[in-house]
Amino acid sequence: MADYFIRPITSDDYSSIREIDILTQIQYLGQKKWDEFILAEKETHLVCRQPNFDGFVKSGYSLLIESENKIIGFILAFETVPISQEIYCEYLAIDPSWQGKGIGVLLYKNLIEIAKKNNIKKIWSLINTDNPNSIKAHLKAGFKLNDRKEAVLII
Image 1 (cartoon, one colour):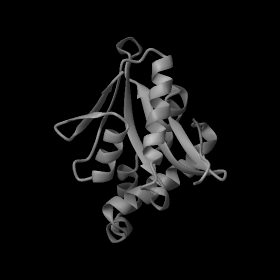
Image 2 (cartoon, helix red, strand yellow):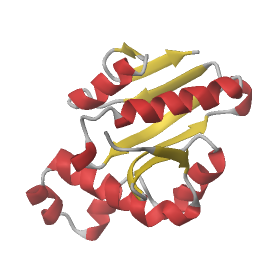
Image 3 (cartoon, helix red, strand yellow):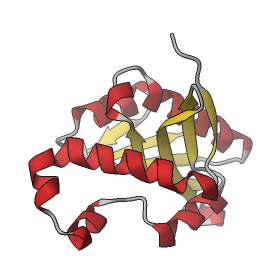
Image 4 (tube, helix red, strand yellow):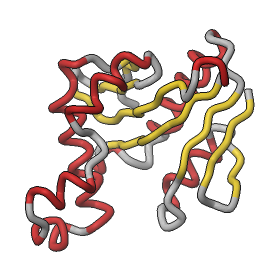
């Protein structure tokens, strides 16, 4: 089993995280469809965009996971409103060659520990109903599904 290292994302991680975002979009949409998009269309499908990235860095809730000094997955999350004590997970992505190894669950479990230390009461995310791997990872991490579109974890 590989050794994993989980840490908060930094501004220096942008290009590596973006690469994984692209790989997972290609996996989801298919290479042919991805190649047919013009650059602007590709950008609309990506979650990791430079203007928003600093906000994820500053949130303290966005994490990445590395193996052998290579980023293999990440979670982009932020506190919705400090007074609400909720975290919204905008995106969880694992390099396709590393999927199915429980890495998403490891990221969520680390996020849950950080949330507990910060008195967060709820973690939630929206999930695609046609992504069984995402649904499975959320359930394994302890989330409950609402209408198969929203995953919620009450801490």
